[in-house]
Length: 67
View 1: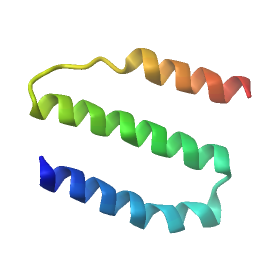
View 2 (view 1 turned 90 degrees about the vertical axis):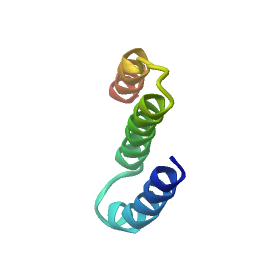
View 3 (view 1 turned 180 degrees about the vertical axis):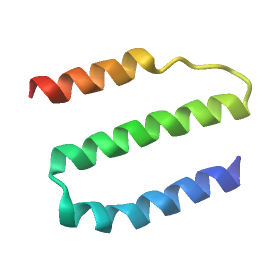
View 4 (view 1 turned 60 degrees about the vertical axis):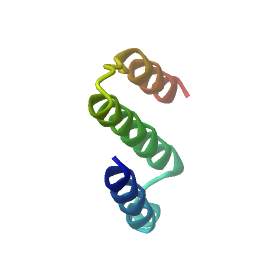
């Protein structure tokens, strides 16, 4: 699991400069929030404790659409 977390952090650090050139701040924040939700799902699979983040993802999308 340590390798997964390390790879995830490295991928997020590499993605940031690429995103900042072409995207607005809202899109960048949404990308990171959804990526963290995906990482949370994978970590829950690794520790065999299922988490259902669909309500959180729905809240995030609604918040971005309304603002």
